[in-house]
Image (cartoon, rainbow, N blue to C red; front, side, top):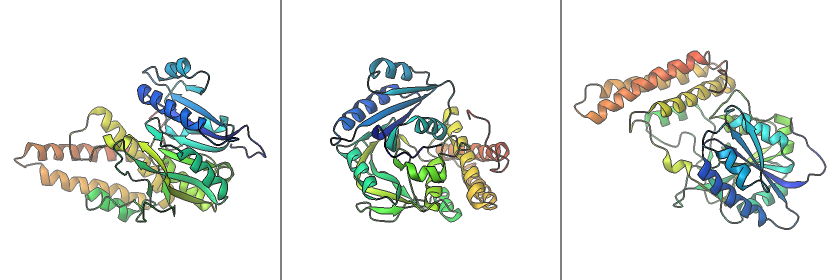
Length: 329
């Protein structure tokens, strides 16, 4: 459990979960430590890296190059995003807790502004940043909670706004949830809600936590002048553009498992609609593309058939969203 004390050695603990991103992790930590050093006087920071059994030498690089400035925690297995962060948060000694992806980088002054906002607003349980790509292009930074209708819009390709906020991205706002690429968390909120639900190995853990924090009476805030460069959005690809590799199919399976776990937890019987909606739309894609003369369209049909099988597998493995498969997934 998270402790709430009257005093802390650090104003903030910044936690980075590492998994096979050694070179990006080095860049992230170099940038992060420079940002920590620029905090106002009296706002000391600590940096923790928890390595999820990386095989690329990430942990060894941190131990060798950042031994004097980073606390390194190692796991012998891949714990997933939420559980790894839980372990680090329980070990952290900062008044506030910041989660930062290894492919994310603070723009100048972002960390200091996030701390100032949290200190000024006791009702803010979680805060999020404006995310941009390396080229400055905006990324979705704050979203609405998932619904069946919103999921249908996204899966059908009709709209990307199934979970995006419709507010002005240049104005601060109270939102439903913010992405785990960057979030700052108030200890008092976590003391009421608990940490990330360990049922989620990857995906939906931050949505679930934001939902519980809001239910506990705190707000989830979006601050446009807290700017974080995030590389993950630059490499994402839309479903249907290519036939998945085995690794990509594995990640999609993780997403489907977490979707079912989330809808069962927060929407009960609607988890059935989630399953049949996704499989039904995929079936239509199979029918539409299977006999096309276009090789690209036939490939999309084969991909859709694979995704249908993955959703069936996710349903069976989670028993309809009731149980989380043994980790690591």
